[in-house]
Image (cartoon, rainbow, N blue to C red; front, side, top):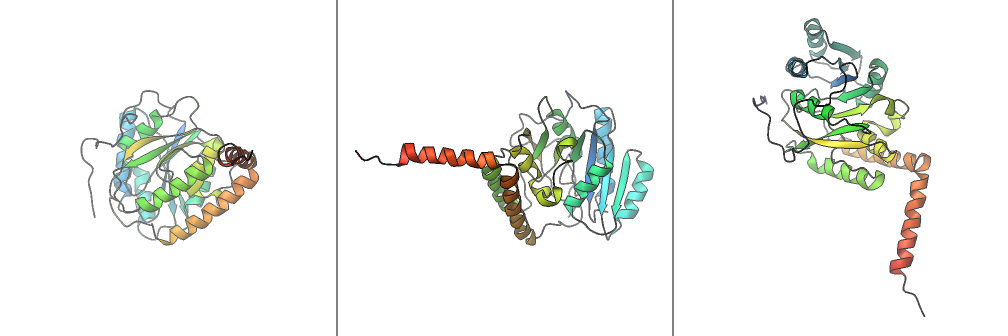
Length: 278
């Protein structure tokens, strides 16, 4: 299925904080655009064209790092051709598929900018709107910005809402969409055990550790070309990952929070639920 983008920005459900121009931009050398690619040969030419248009609108270029995670289609050849066309494009190839977490680890070794913007290779995100929107949300004290998909129609909202709700309860996360486009301070990530946390719970852990994570609404589009890599087997693995992350966090970083919750629960029980006998 091929879906083109409309010429104008779509109306968002909540668009008060969503803008397509930069009022307080980060400096041009401070952000790397990170794009994971697995069999995205049909999307990459259009994506790089949109990124180039984005930079023209911004007035400066940002480095773009595409990590080919062991693609078996024409992705490597397409990227080779695109590198000859766009000077801002850098490519790293994984010889075999290693997964999103390893893509993050590779990015942290290759990109040395202060911030990383996690994009999408499937064109469900429009960089002309989303990159300026997230950059503009960076103000003093903000450590990460999450995009919040509006009018999402990929049939995965139920599982996503369940995972987000679990992280809101377990880690005090306040955002609604933790596994979409995001902009993060690089130094907040380098010391984290990514193999354990995985990409799924990165923002939840940062939020629980006290980093300020904010969100902005962003439009969602159907995949431009190719097929989704999502499979229902991920529901099992993500559930197991959640248990591992929860145990790790509360035993290593969240002990005080656990004790605080226990004390609060005990006090609440004593004050409100216990019937005193006279």
